[in-house]
Amino acid sequence: MSVDEKTAVTADGLLWDGIVTLHGRVEHRLAKALQRRHGIGLSEYRTLCRLSRAEDGELRMQELADLIGLNQSSVSRLVARLESAGLTRRDMCPKDRRGVYTVITEEGRAVQKSAAPTYAETLTEALDDAARDPALAPLLATLRP
Image (cartoon, rainbow, N blue to C red; front, side, top):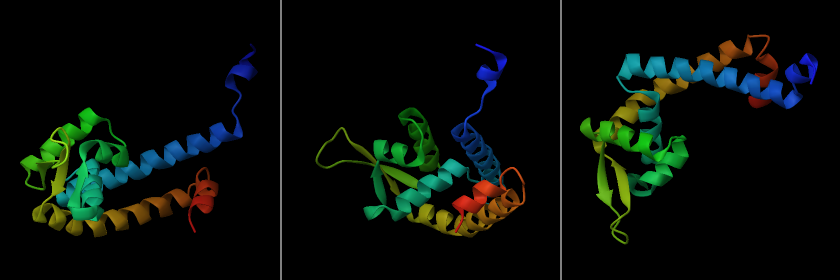
């Protein structure tokens, strides 16, 4: 295999590289803003958002893991931190005692509501900045309405 064959980049590869770059930049800005202004991490914020939109404010741990893109172990640690902060609590599934739910508390709803404008503002700023980057502008033009 020649060097050219090893380093050949497909259109899909270039697209994915752009998505990964965009994702990294945006995630970094969101995480920094949420931590600085509200004292919560990005995963904590996303968890509170998912719970606040869920029926009865609760989700099974595995469902939450799937929704926020973390593995079961990471979600367990995340939920433990949220519980310690009083933002969520655990509950057992009434039909299956092995099933564990995490439930958002009123304090958790208040933190999520308070942080939502920061998240929205920072997301827009990060995407606007990325749209000015010549390497990312075509991707943003496709993704944004």
